[in-house]
Length: 79
Image 1: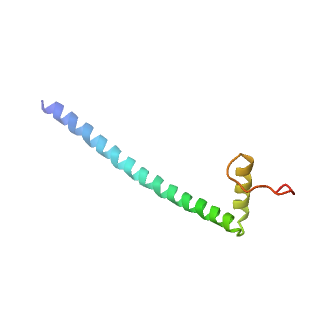
Image 2 (image 1 turned 180 degrees about the vertical axis):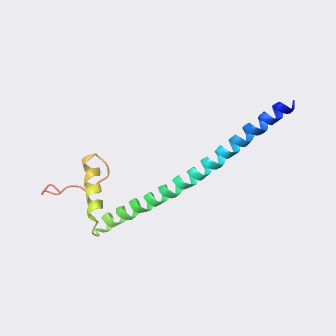
Image 3 (image 1 turned 90 degrees about the vertical axis):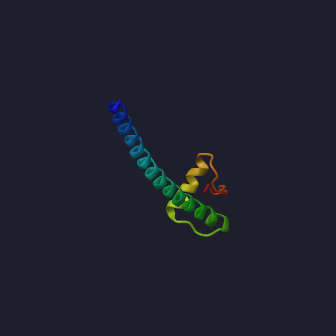
């Protein structure tokens, strides 16, 4: 009987540690996702307001257009 309780205790502790690790990983992923969302929102706002973009931002927009995503429409020059 005591052996079964000890096994149950060990299993419960292992699950508790795993839950703690998953919570930590989930928090880190949420934080990274929020930062990415802010960057994307800022880029979209700059595009909508007609402000200048960084070179990488412009390349990303062009790449999205080529892949069928929401990109800037190309003009007659082919940009």
